[in-house]
Length: 255
Image (cartoon, rainbow, N blue to C red; front, side, top):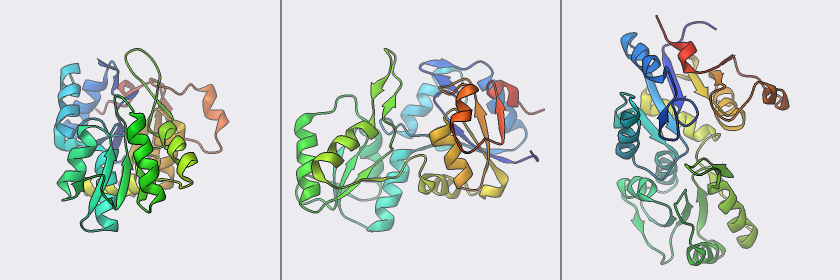
């Protein structure tokens, strides 16, 4: 693979595992800075704001600033603004999603919203889900931050946005538009945010079904790290292949 100058880097399973930094991730990030490479940390996690996530990463020992992070909540807000310059939305999510939608000038309400927006949350509320179903059936557009059916937590796997979206879809009869990985919209939004082109950018991730396929579909070279959820054997289950496979980002430290 020819040398590239820009990187989109998944967070969980690539740089951190829970509250622990993956060994060598700090040296990899510092090597990017030393070589003048532009990079952006990408995450489907819509719970936290950029500032929250930067604080979390810094606590593990990674020197990453808030403006070097791009979330599915930010991609979702950008999509909404592109669809309708101003409006209102009923949101099921936490501060990361609420702040992103507020930042584009949208009002959060359950009275005749233009959009119903589903994100990750610490506690899905059945009353909120019922409200979302009814609003969608009344004509609100249905958007979800990402299709991940499960996500990691300190105590193990938990149901995630994709699982709840499936419930709402089944009840309402309306399919959501997903804005996070593997949606090409998130990848293009991240490239635009960073101000780079796909041909000079590498996508690094630990999931074949989100990170790698999103990178391939967006015209980027891809690197799969085995420090997350995908094993070497599981790669064979997919009809596409990453450009490179490494144990972890520790193997990608630049000279």
